[in-house]
Length: 474
Image (cartoon, rainbow, N blue to C red):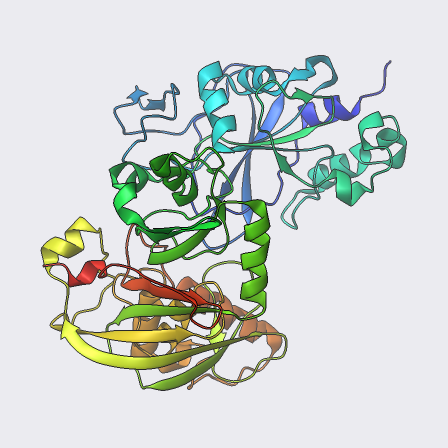
């Protein structure tokens, strides 16, 4: 009897890989049809990288329940990714390994493996929602013993040596993932594919007059007043609906604009997009050398003291970003300077509704406090996390405000706060940290009170300012 191949081993029991998403857990509907393949669909809890596997036999993949008009009998239909829906579909990430008998173009394999229309799969590839690796990546700690056993078997040196495509590569190099950019790209037996069937969407991109958001056009760069609710350079599963893409089209440029730095999706304001790869590298160098200065306007629910605010951020690359006023070994230094803080009227309800500003549970909505901030270090979510830690979370920040409110009600709940408790063991502290993380909410839908109001570099030789922030509208 012929020994099972690398591809057939995975076809009979595919490993669930560790990947990060921000969707809610998805329940998949069972399909009574049988199939020789057995796949796992990944559903990841928001704010964690823990995974839950749903494995079953099917010839047509399970699909998530949908309540949108694009559904029949509660089952999702797949036509095209455009026009962009106003709602977000439930998370669906499929992990596949190409069987020996199904080598060929990536589009053909995915269509057959997931029973998806060719045009829809072509759209996914165009959006950057399909990734591959020559060898299946390392399984997460949550993998089952059977999944680990299969992984070890198919990554044996004796198996990998038979594949010419990975000769000269280490296993780690062969496990590195890349985007598939061409529907006709050949995928050989043993190739790992990760398909984001429901990519994160940015409907706000189609509502913006992008030409009106252009601040400056220079020979080497473009300065854009980024709208809230958009992504500067894209996400893991969507590099199409981005500021860089839409600004490129608005200006009629042949060469796509390139991302030089990021601001949060829920923030608005100045971003610099490079027109060439060379200037992209140049601007990155200016950032590293601290030649770029960024000023922000933050609309906080409480006043902030003037001066430099210092925290240390936990070195975990996922939200929420936890900070401590006390020095923590290995944690990142976070510093900002509050230059001004003035009392202003709380945004009008019609303006909040227009920008989908979330309530977040803050009850005192007569006044807010507009702070001008000089960002001295540029950590992800830094201003949001630091202001929340000071008891002055940003208006509409559904991720950090709930935790700030919880800490006001119960000061000892924050294991890194001023009133932190003394824990009997590291296990007790780990539990407290997990509980503190759980106090945070989900990422905002559209806008928060945060704007990158000015960007400058080379000692003020280049200075650009954004328009008035959304909360000043009347």
